[in-house]
Length: 107
Image 1 (spheres, helix red, strand yellow):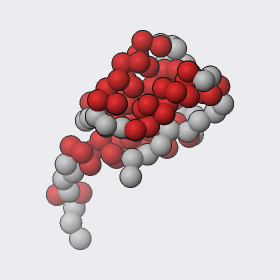
Image 2 (cartoon, helix red, strand yellow):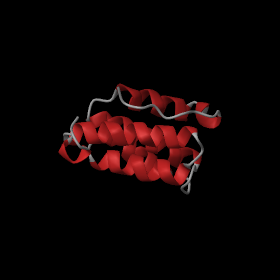
Image 3 (cartoon, helix red, strand yellow):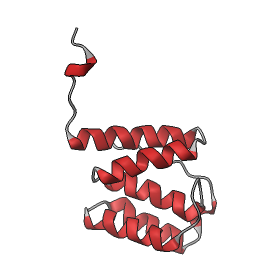
Image 4 (cartoon, one colour):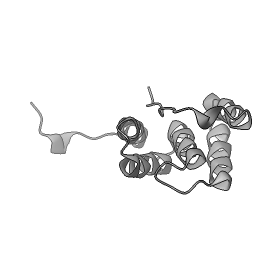
């Protein structure tokens, strides 16, 4: 068995893992941790994490509500080809984010 110090993840894999950890933290209500992990994933280029973080800013979960930040994150996610970004933008317009929602982990 290899030791963990020999395991290497690509930047894309790191972003996927950070998104999954952030989603788990969010589901547990640990918004500070979710914010930390989603930000790491966003730095790694995860469009899904951008959408998840946008939800947090829209709902004010662990952060102050910030519509400008929501737009910025969704614009970035859409530019990366994330279809969930346009769907999320439409849900925000329709006021559908008043219901609890769990961020998704990347597949």
